[in-house]
Amino acid sequence: MALFLSPKAITLLFFSLSLALYCSIDPFHHCAISDFPNFVSHEVVSPRPDEVPWERDSQNSLQKSKILFLNQVQGPESVAFDSLGRGPYTGVADGRVLFWNGQKWIDFAYTSSNRSEICDPKPSALSYLRNEHICGRPLGLRFDKRTGDLYIADAYMGLLKVDSSINYQRRNFLQLVFSGDNTGRVLKYDPIAKKAVVLVSNLQFPNGVSISKDGSFFVFCEGDIGSLRRYWLKGEKAGTTDVFAFLPGHPDNLRMFILRLPITARTHYSFQIGLRPHGLVVKYSPEGKLMQVLEDSEGKVVRSVSEVEEKDGKLWLGSVLMNFVAVYDL
Image (cartoon, rainbow, N blue to C red; front, side, top):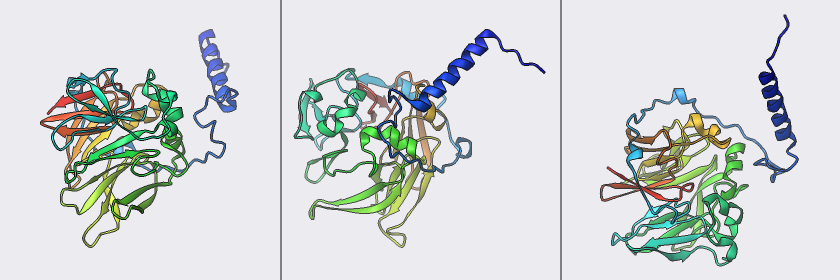
């Protein structure tokens, strides 16, 4: 039986084949892994989205969030307030830690001693990726309630020079996701001895740590697998890990078991080829029970969430991909 294709179908087929050939040859080195000749892929084993019980936020609650500081901050991943309630403080894409004094943003700290004009403001957070290792990238902010000191976790030169992987730096996070690299680690830092100890290794994109209220365990994200892992600090299980929860998405960060999912699992790889992600925030109990889901499934207001800080009945939402801070009233 003869098969006849319309001119439109033939054109589309030719375009698809040409695009596939171009991507395989990559003559102009546009591919995300073109700068990594030793790129090695690893198997990523995680439950299918339909195997993970999940609730949806049919009200798209995050769309009710208020947008603050639009175009004043680029990529504000972490948001923190000091012991006097002042702030917020946030780390931005050009390597600075900023402080909101109630009237304007002022420079609070720099994580790199090698700052130059290449770290000057740019149109988007992604514009800084190539020079992050020079300008620094503060990603985590926490205040010590006892001393009032601010701890800054910079991906390159902060409290600890720690990356998500041994082989890939933070600016290469897409290559890390593509490869399924399993060289990630969780480390413990002793500020008195000034030493770091590896607690867990061979992880696929670990990101975010939060200690339980009673101090018996902490939970961390393993992003590529889409899971929360629990590391026991006390009791018979001390020094061991188990699964705290599986997620229908790829977790980014943790604060006292409020979790940020920047995109859902079904759109994870779609996002990597250019389709729109959407923000998702979920709340878990210390026992691993899902308690609350907040979502913007259309990505109209909150298209990505990297971290959440709860203060005075509000959730402050930061993201490495946004140029503002969103605030949601609980």
